[in-house]
Image 1 (cartoon, rainbow, N blue to C red):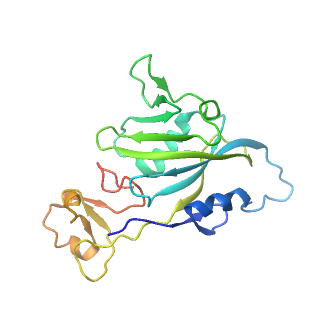
Image 2 (image 1 turned 180 degrees about the horizontal axis):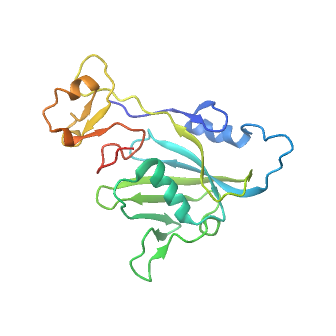
Image 3 (image 1 turned 90 degrees about the vertical axis):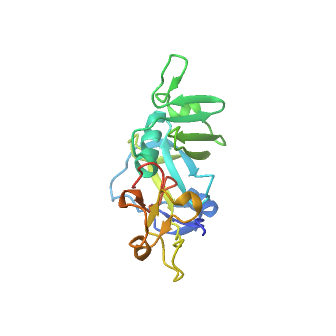
Length: 221
């Protein structure tokens, strides 16, 4: 079974590229033309590449306003890939840790502006949930000016959903559910037909979703 996805879709123009080629494309992509007569303000943003290093199948390209707090990036990652039960999270940037919910005065919060804690070329790590952990790696690839004054993080591109084969049937069926009891023994990925015959109880199943947190904790997308 392979979970590696080599292509993704540009959210600005719809073009399809691999993760590395997508960086080059986004540096030149203008996206949809602005409405005639509209001249929106420009804001400084970092182009970030985010990936799940343990699988290589899940990656994103993001535009993050440099004056937005780290908490905005945390919120975005949770919303699109991670949030299930309100777990703690943490960024590690140049040897400094920033927490979603600091428990003491010695722990830094995510109120710090993105542009003050990272710069072009930085590689940083992110952890969501310190029990059933999901780890992400991020890199700042460039800075650019982008129309719009919003402090929201913008999705530039994302991997296409990996096609994962069922662990049980021999007909090449694609998994739609994962059994959280059996995934650790290599028998957890199930197509729609095989899930009906699987012996584990219904509350053992989670949907197969386009996220590195698939099958973990209670994450359902």
